[in-house]
Amino acid sequence: MTVANGQLERKQGARQTRQKVIARFETGYWGTNAPLGYKMQTDSNKPRILIRDEPIATYIQHVLEGFANGRFETLVEAKRYLDSCPEFPKTKSKGVHTDVVKKLLTRTVYAGMVEMACWGISLREGHHEGLVDIQTFKKIQDRLEGKSKAPQRKDLNLDFPLRGAVNCGCCDGALTANWSKGRKARHPYYICRNKGCESYGKSIRRDVMHEQFGELLEGMVAPKPVIKTADTMFRLHWDDIDNRKAQDRLNAESELLDLEIEKERIIDKIINVNNLEVTRTLEDRLQKMELDKLALQEKISKCGTQTGNYDKSFRTAMSFLENPHKLWASEQYEHKRAVIQLAFSERLVYDRNQGFRTAAKAEPFRLIEELSMGNTKMVGRAGFEPATN
Image 1 (cartoon, rainbow, N blue to C red):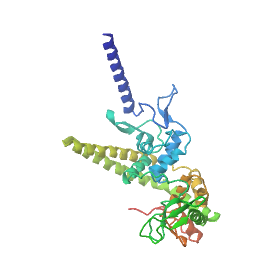
Image 2: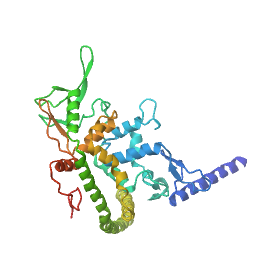
Image 3: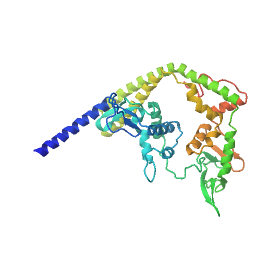
Image 4: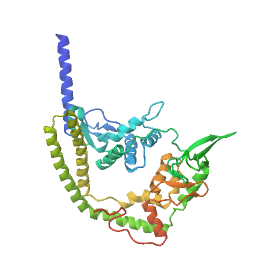
């Protein structure tokens, strides 16, 4: 009898605990152990809510933002960044595993949302502060769905930051790199491995290519008067963003209305369909649409706010535009890769005899170059991107 009563009490306790956890999730509060990067608010005078656990939260935020904007092109690059973060938890042998990175990129809690599908709790806005906004999180999911998983390569490191970013001048294939063993020492080279290329197997000294790349960046250093003019143009564009927010809000509200109509249509299909596989597919679509809905709601709410302080937001960007070579001179691999991604719109092409060919510069650098040449035409109201209907 005593044993039976004990079992009954444990079952009742477990059921009550589960009900409390479910109730917290349903009302937008996190109900289980705090995820990595968060901790529970312990102040008894405040609600029990997730708050940032520093510095882990900042590390994860950098990974999320970096993957969304292309700073980290692959999971491996994001992993390498986390490996360099001293306080981020790692395994003894392999550091941070790419599966951990993938999980960080796909957890909705980091966008300020809560869900618990195993208990039937759908995606909803949480009461905690997200590490990134919902629109950034959606960009991450789009990137993950649109590209295949990049293979992990152990040879991607600080030794060869231009690997994969420079094409061969003969065959236009990507140059690879390796260390070559000499009589007394090992030497670093970039090399073309395309067997049909005239330059197949012909090496290029790494230090020579890096020196020429540095010279290319130094050639992009703009005079201070040009930077001042560009700063004025960017500031005008920044101010114009606020003027366009009213129309952006109307467009987002229209998209939200269309989305709600589509959701109702899918729900009707789920009710009338008897096929289990079709039902699951429709439910997956409904889940993605819920994320789209939250992203649109967030966009609408932000359309009524000021863009922010230009000087604070653009100080680092203008410093980079003024002299991109400073970032290239950094000892961090991620900084060197960031230079390549931010300064050029296409892959560079390297000729073994002539060096780098004319590079396709990113839009801000192209604008600065035009200003340096005397073209002072101001940017139109549509901004720097092509106008859309």
